[in-house]
Length: 335
Ligand SMILES: NC(=O)c1ccc[n+]([C@@H]2O[C@H](COP(=O)([O-])OP(=O)(O)OC[C@H]3O[C@@H](n4cnc5c(N)ncnc54)[C@H](OP(=O)(O)O)[C@@H]3O)[C@@H](O)[C@H]2O)c1
Image (cartoon, rainbow, N blue to C red; front, side, top):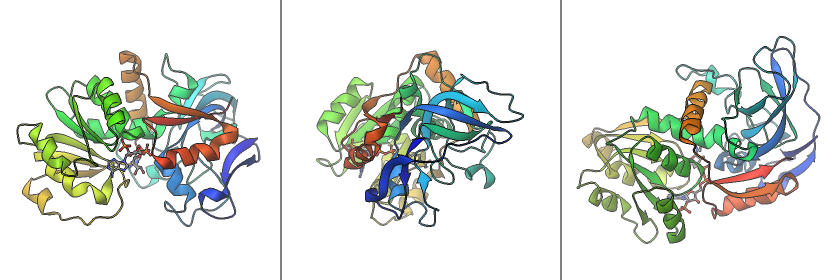
């Protein structure tokens, strides 16, 4: 089969769409004929050796994909050939609280991933494609949408709450769509006025350009009667965390998710003086994915796909993601 593989060393120059052995399902395993995959910032970090510099190579990239069950191993009862499925980021986290074991077995990192014609998954590491979604749309969900859902539900998002979203990448655009579907007010930042306009069209209540307005935490407080937001979906990391803490209300919740804005020190004074809850979020379980899919199907939500590349151009798709010019998700079509 063809797959997007990192081999011979880390770095985007070592990415290639190349032949890779076809997977064979063992007991309790399923092989999926992937129809579409999607890219995440994590894939860039993995390819550059920033995620796990000791990861053995070669490795098929990609945590996110959807397709049809092509073969099942002995003892598989949950799935039959032809089922329309999406893979779960963590193959061994069916539900319940996160554990050390649950966060092992991540696709496209701990084991081969989904940017491939065929993918080997565990029987418990799949969900049905939500009704109404194409394979390309379903392929956007496993990492970014599940993470956004986990953050919003953990932070008590709902009617009467105000959430802050940083930038307009995959996680933040899903968080915008989901927060609005959950009845919350959504504030968003972006480095691009054109992307802010798109976010407003998608339902954001207000936005500001963090490049033109580096004191965006003050803007956030001005939008909330001086109090700050209930919940921050924090994808910037060290470079934004202090401002995010200042943008949250006393007693607010900051979901720590990403590392997009490198650098910056972090002074914890704001966190303790504002009595904030800082909570690390690491994607989520299959049960969270299933809950998310019920909301997607019920609300008729459609993931925002910025651009689709054919599998043969997957390395170019990675460079496009790296450029940060996208809004929402970048997809690889594996038809
Ligand atoms: N913890 C987890 O389980 C988990 C899961 C998924 C993702 N993540 C992490 O979350 C982050 C986002 O992932 P993603 O896949 O959504 O990334 P992405 O799609 O590549 O997001 C890129 C966008 O982020 C925005 N951005 C970049 N620098 C920014 C800054 N300084 N302040 C605000 N926004 C900034 C830009 O939006 P504008 O052009 O609009 O400014 C950029 O287009 C990454 O660090 C990723 O590793 C973590």
